[in-house]
Length: 410
Image (tube, rainbow, N blue to C red; front, side, top):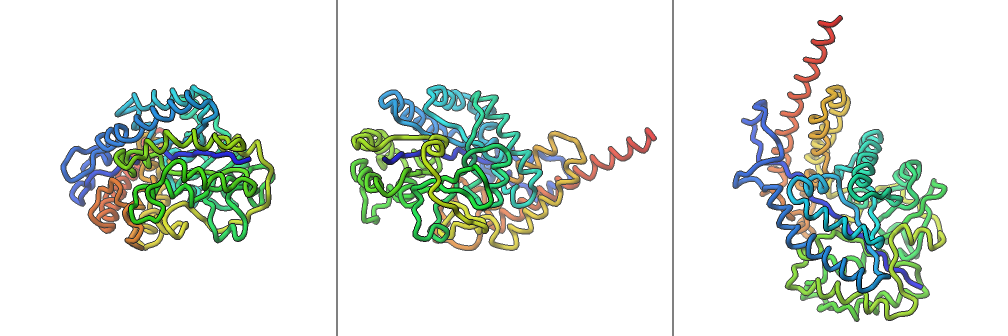
């Protein structure tokens, strides 16, 4: 028996507006801007919603109604949920309609789509708890499966997440760590007791997410029939085929004109023709299948780019300087007790800001240009550091005033 498990990441950052050195100390907002030079966050969200979220949700809902066995799962960054509520509430309602079917699982992650686990375990936990509360508020569910930002994962993360009460965690099915083993089984992370590890089948996932419209690909055009044959080949050699990808695959990365929606509509029928195939959510996969071995992944891996490491965010001195400077502010930020300052600092943690500073390659670079506000990584770095400098001044001023008030009271 083979279970197909669809997982979709839904995320859009609050992109930073054009912020010059002359704006420092002037009290400007960092994320809202309608100038020609900056990317407008509301326009981006509405564009992606119209091309991807709303039409794909409609297809998924139709599939659930037509095939009650069909299931899918989603994780939403907290910042994309905030933007849905702020700019386009209709999208929230569309996703709620899906979760209300009972065929859709919602996963937990860091609220701000951040790299917080690498720099502050306390901040990481705070963001996960904040995300859990947001998901409970909107979707009325309590997630039991966790996925970290961009599938960043190692043993220590699995242990931390297990201690927070989750029963399953997602990661990339990286060849280097798997060796002879298959990503189509459930594993146990080294150093944990109960949590189960579900691995992305990156070849079959990327056939849809990246290669679907590539005319030079030897398998183009990809049909539901052909793709199902590849899944059927797993029968007897695996328990689940975990298809993890950005939700923007449908309609945005792969335009409607490529036939991606027709492919999605046809796929369940072909998969369910095989009597041993079914669909399961990640938590159902974890509950249904036994652990087939222990995986020791002590170095961080991710689903980004060919290296599957942290290089997309931390490969050059600009990225490291920017993120280290940001997290060094944590004690001062928390000392302000100012919700707006804390929220702003956390929005600056969103991994996309450091993605835009990447210089290590251009062979995979197209994904980094996705709604990128900057013409170069250096411009991204300068803009970010200008904002960070301004934020430091605000924090310093707030904490100085707090000290002054305490001094007067004493």
